[in-house]
Image (tube, rainbow, N blue to C red):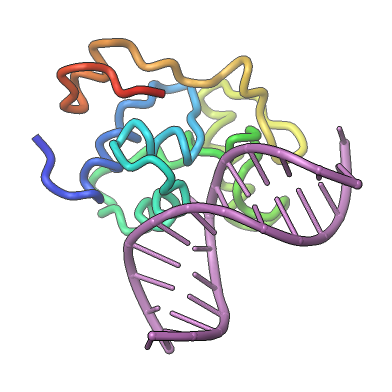
Length: 118
DNA sequence: GTATTGACTTCAT
DNA sequence: AATGAAGCCAATA
């Protein structure tokens, strides 16, 4: 079981399957921190490298990469996404295609006894 | 204490 | 589609 906000956010992101993506706000909600989308972005950067956090799978609610188009980080994120089969165009992906829908088991792995209200 | 700053979101133009 | 304002909340100055 996790014990602090950082861990909850990290663990939630770690559940996102390869080839899927999730929004910052969505991660916040799943981590039990509704309304804290901005905190998710902050906390991702604090994750220890050993976690191998799949940070590239977290995008804005619109499907847009949070970094400015063509910036170093945006390019890196797009590359990582393409490596796992996600099509990135104009600094964004199609949410309707790739958005992560957690299964009950995945929610359970996050420590929920009942699904959170989305 | 107030002000500013974000890997954000939503709504209205 | 693109742009802007307002809302958001924790961290920082």
